[in-house]
Length: 187
Image 1 (cartoon, rainbow, N blue to C red):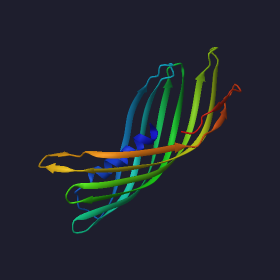
Image 2: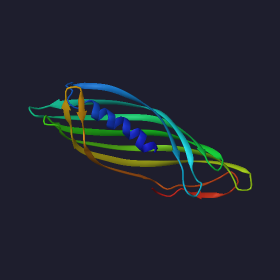
Image 3: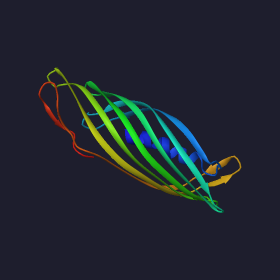
Image 4: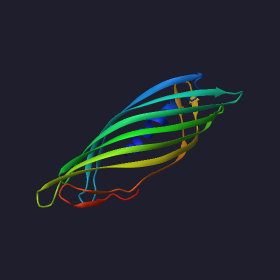
């Protein structure tokens, strides 16, 4: 969820500058989302995520096409409340690059690559009522490719697209304050 929220700020940037003429620009985008996740096993949680992404990009225009290339970095903080009791948080530091190509007929291809450093903290409630806490760091990397067509007619536009997104994190073992070991695993 953290990776996707941060990625959306860059996708929004790429979408907002289609058909716009400029040379180089700095931009920023705030993140403020709330997610409620439920599971049949009762391991649901509620997440509130806030953050900021900052970027810089340049646009290069040719006769019928244009390209955009940019870099971005960001920070986000998630507060998480678990259905079974306990809470946690994730601080994410992200760095990435993006590029886009568009034709004057509306066809486009966009790509984003990014890496993340996650600082995770957990305060949990055990089945016997006792509490425990722990923390660990993990790294993530991902990419997003999107291709579509943008139709504009006056005040409205339609943009059908096909997209692929991939993301992975390294697995981490950590020990809670009560001695219980946890293996986060890879995603």
